[in-house]
Image (cartoon, rainbow, N blue to C red; front, side, top):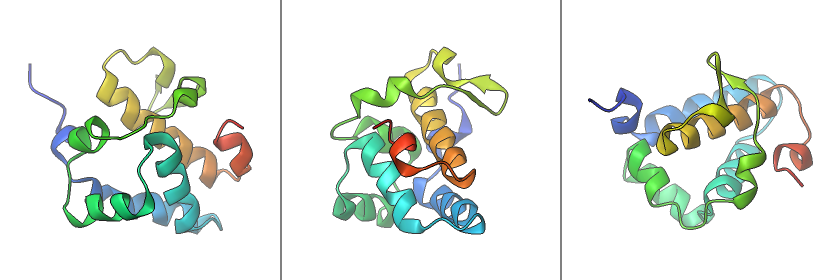
Length: 116
């Protein structure tokens, strides 16, 4: 079985779309970065390095230093699929991030997005 194309896509090519989506709704790049750091455990410096190196999605999530244990509280539908029902771990991580960015763009408070 071949991997989904998103796995080999550079995280750096999709990241600007996350930022644009947030900014169109009055949110900031800093908030996008905070969400990514919360989900993965990357520091800002290492996140920026991953972007510079054009790390692919699969590697980006596989190398995440400290995936947040509260990420299993992320529930809902992204692209017609319930994120909590996705069985493939890498795809689930990608959809978790998509869901969090959607919540940001919809104006949800950061405390709720970060499951505090």
